[in-house]
Length: 329
Ligand code: NAP
Ligand code: G4F
Image (cartoon, rainbow, N blue to C red; front, side, top):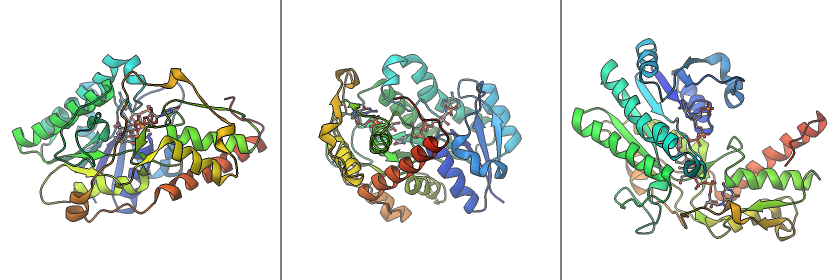
């Protein structure tokens, strides 16, 4: 039986990847950091089928110990400070987690068992102020946030361990991917949650930043399959994972509000505080290499994704109302 270790298992991608690996017959282990209250909501439904270990990307020895204990065949390094605006507020901590954390993980792998296959969660944020459209594996990087800069470091150190030590290290350059499990601070979920709350009479305004920003949004469930496929190949390599379709934040809002029968213009307000010091205006990926080599293709369209998220939020909010508790927004 193959064993996999996932850092960031409590996050959106970690939870979908754990499900996928269980379906493939893996023994699944996850790294969690201690918190005063447990934060296992996304993995509650599989909690009895996975094993969790305490460790932290800031603590080298904890990473070595967990690898020594689990002896995985594959490591998926998904843990990171993943919210772009916070990276301007905590740039040093972002670099510790999102950049140096990758080296700590790679060093732990090299020390414990360099034959472990390693996946690094790289990001389309690395393309930033894009040099060409669409972006592929050869497009130069120009990151626009401390998060993007940290991810560029994580990408290159992954490539470097492959080239320096011959380790099986892959960097997946994933474009934005979303789901009903997306954190509420990211724009898709912020919009679908607000559309549900407004529809159900719990909220009357939605404050947003730049409506003109364009992203290539896919479904997280599709994207974790690509991570796994990368580690099943004969040779390690880097891959762009994207839908190849671009939509603006304005279109996202329109699709979500139309779906619940509301005119978005009556509810959305622009809040200048939500504009970023440096914006990534557009991202659109070319995943031709992933299609050719991995046989990977996305299965959920943009509209299906947003409808899926609105449906899930309507259900959640209705449940909260029935239980007599609903978030204040
Ligand atoms: P997410 O929901 O924010 O999850 C992040 C995970 O990292 C959480 O499990 C978090 O644990 C963990 N973590 C953060 N700091 C840690 C530390 N110091 N030690 C151990 N664990 C730590 O993010 P996601 O959307 O699933 O994304 C997964 C990865 O893919 C991230 O690296 C992200 O940067 C990258 N990525 C995401 C996208 C996307 O569109 N979703 C696109 C490209 C790349 P807690 O639960 O304890 O906070
Ligand atoms: O949903 P977002 O916060 O995602 P962003 O910044 O693109 O980052 C996500 O995708 C990256 C891949 O490219 C990941 F690496 C990263 O970890 C994360 O998952 O914002 C998307 C766009 C931005 O242009 C932002 O300015 O939406 C715009 N936006 C407009 N109003 C807003 C808002 N974003 C947020 N979060 N909140 C707003 O109110």
